[in-house]
Image 1 (cartoon, rainbow, N blue to C red):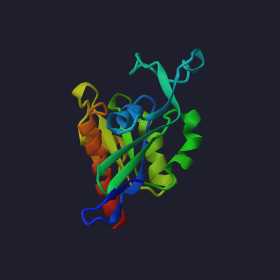
Image 2: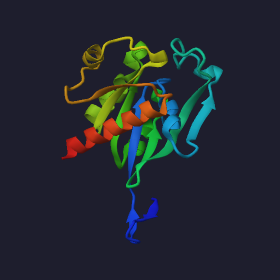
Image 3: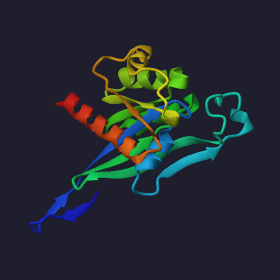
Image 4: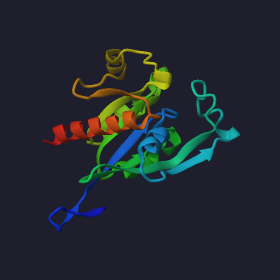
Length: 193
């Protein structure tokens, strides 16, 4: 936690909270965490091996050569009183056993979606809707600035409750990623109020 002196010379304590960034394989979770983190993000990226060629679908991301094998971690200070700790989940099914530990104590989650492979995010949506009671939003990662499907089609395809916000983003753009996090915080606070 960060301690900063307040104008009246007393000390103030920044509130910190945990945010989870989840989604399928190769949707941009590591990129989103890295784009907004004010510290060098911890990334557990490992080179993909021949053993994973039959497991990990690279059709939409043929240039991908690494994958997250544990988690991503970053930190962003939204203002002098709020610090977010970001935890990116691994996307492949063989690493889902870690999700319960990563979400423990979180304020909420961002499910990152690539509409070219929308079915890859079904497990994350199912997890946050049914397995844990944690507010979440869906962030459609618009690769190359392209929205391949209208937001309402994404909502229908994911069978999302009308109260679940969907936002558009570019995980590479710090301002866009920061907006996603702010939208999640607003939604999570509205849910718990």
